[in-house]
Image (tube, rainbow over the protein chains, first blue to last red):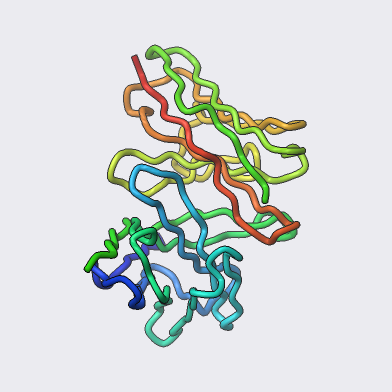
Length: 125
Length: 108
């Protein structure tokens, strides 16, 4: 059973960089076949896809966040990470890491089948 | 960008059937996935690829997708089904994963 766990600071100052790490257990990131994702949820709101990474390092980002987002992977630690720069109060949210599995032949996109418990990050001075 | 529209709320009595819609332009041409989220918890995948169920998800959860509307159906609703439900697709034109606005299911 794959498990994901987010870790990182719960409070970040405005204009600084938000950094989170997701540790994967019960399966190897290096085995391939999946993308490793970050998704956030503003308080009381819906879900927003931030981006994802393949074990090889290939990344795809939400265009609305692309200029501020970096997702990286450390296969030796079975972890992947999120950095979001120049944060403002609008980046206050619960951040989830999730595994993305492809639909059938992988030409119809991916769905998110395993999720971490989520971590609340508050941007405030 | 691609927009998925869900009703804000659906109310249903125990034992009855709840139907949650997800509207989008020609959504029938896309693969739709559904998530259940209970308060303070992470989302859980309940239906993928329009109508498939992950292991461990009861047969009471089913999905369909045609035209401009996808539907998640919960049969024989139980109190434990009370949650927010989100649909999700991949928009190939923008290479963006899009979630619906969410529907709160209340069991009366």
